[in-house]
Image 1: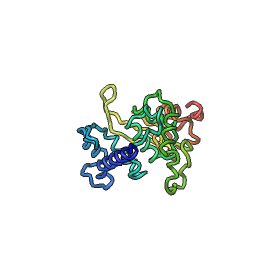
Image 2 (image 1 turned 120 degrees about the vertical axis):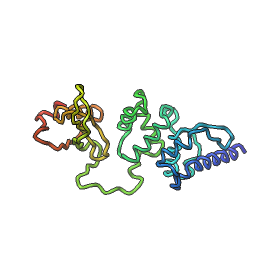
Image 3 (image 1 turned 180 degrees about the vertical axis):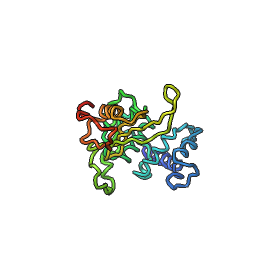
Image 4 (image 1 turned 135 degrees about the vertical axis):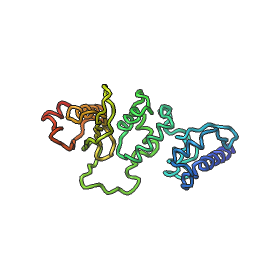
Length: 247
């Protein structure tokens, strides 16, 4: 009897969750984005099926959207936390970001995801990569890349993260320097060819090899040494012969 009542309550909660995200699933929400819709809906506490009032976070609704899209109504059923003992260190915002990263960059491993989360301020540096690994495995995200047909790769796209980084510089607006004089700024960016993850980026007043080495060193310190580095060389930015060793 208790099991029947519990199952009924769980089903009602799943329908309640679906009702909140239905406008997103059906693409009928009036807001400019899904995030804006979730923020609006969660501005005030919401009455749950048992009559209690609860103030949900926008990230919670976004997580339900991801769960429904991957597992349907059954994924919205309340369940014991599959990563018990470790996911207490993962906030709703952190969990949502993991789903987003695995969807956008399926080949990112737990170490790379942890680095990204720590850099974005979503995860304490004290949380180990093992915590992320257990969460990914428990929620079926480990083989996310195999969940659908393989996409066609460009002719020169590398097959794994770190196989090749591409670097380039683009012009940015003039801003005042320390003396108040307007100077052109340059954005130096390094992107992983496979995942398209930005592994390094900084703004400078000078577009030269010395400044690029700063960006490259930071990227290597964070993500390791890539197999190849593709740079659009110019006479002004010619790299020293011992550039990689110096970095």
